Image 1 (cartoon, rainbow, N blue to C red):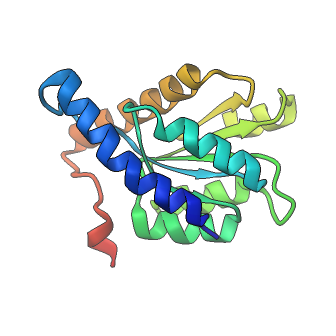
Image 2: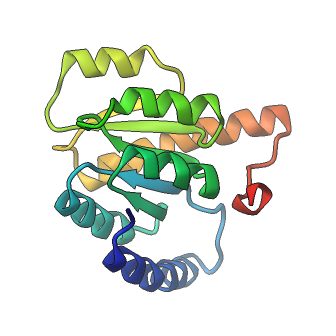
Amino acid sequence: MTCGLFRVLTKMAFVTTDSLRRFATGKIREDPPRVILAQRRSLDLLAMSVLLLSTPKLDLVGAELSLQQLVESSRTLRPEVVVIDTRYPEGTAFDAASDLLENRYTGHVLFLDEAASSCHAERAAGMQNTGYLTKEASLENLCEAIEQLNAVLRRYRRSKKISPPSPRDHE
């Protein structure tokens, strides 16, 4: 379920981040990575959405509370990176991530954990195209991790001469 306030903030942020990027650089070099955020608690989702919308380093295209909505949104929007909370009660974030990656709904998944968990870190490390951070990480660290995952994806696509998927390709 996408939050109504998020939609309003998103519409405002698209104008703001695009304008700031043009003003700061004089042009837009490469598009920032498109990101969908999935958090199990609505307050966390809103707070992280506002933080991520405040940075021109990425393009937050969606925010979801449920894993089912995350998969559906990812299928439609095709983000480069999905940032997902590891502690969902309705199912595991790792199963959802496997589904997203196997079906190529996203290029990479970045797991966010409440606190460092060796079990979750090992599970994330055992999956391809994933990263792992704790929620204590700064906004800069989160943006850097998303940029690093996206850089790997861009290099792979360039080497294979694959163009990035467009949400319009899958409507």
